[in-house]
Length: 278
Image (tube, rainbow, N blue to C red):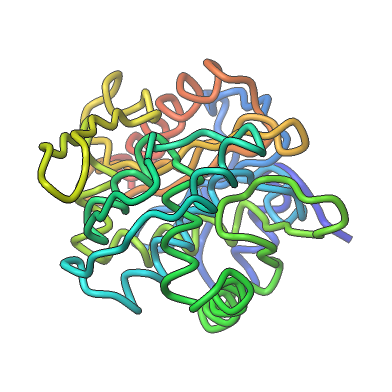
């Protein structure tokens, strides 16, 4: 049985041997279906249905980037195919505006993947480093197991719904992944950027990609990480920030669009207060 709210956090804390602060009267109200917040010392600051399995939409792209960073060189060049473009357009997904025949580096495609949440970039990276999407998704799932993400199953590299695919994760597993991914300086540099501009060359058009994570502009010390939305998953936000000398990582799953950013800001500040208060 999965237990939500602060009770769930307390149970989880006992399992992993890390203390969880008691539910304080000033704890933020969280309307998201699932939520989880932990700091770099391992202290759990908030939990709500944190082990509930649910689709996580484009938060899937964090694992896509994590696998690519362990498979590729940032200077590798990938040629965008018609399939990459048609896949994103045909499924109504967010795109990085890529065109058939463009040749972009892995570094550029990671920005296109994580800032505007480009499904075209996800398709191109998976196709190259599977090789092929089926093999790439297998790598995603092997990586999830190696990271101890026992309640996660990936069905594609972009988080788009596919009938009967069964892809899912939990708030706990998503935070666990973000903690590891943020240890990579290249990943952290991408997700912490508000905008990325790629100048036109003989190999590709000019691109300007803006980060869909509004938290970067509305709160101090924010490190990223990723937004997501599908009808099944609702609005999701994986977020991180520096508070009281520690890195705080959290996630909101199944929320409303604007509310997720306001709630994440409140949760970061709440965790900072708890850390400062000892």
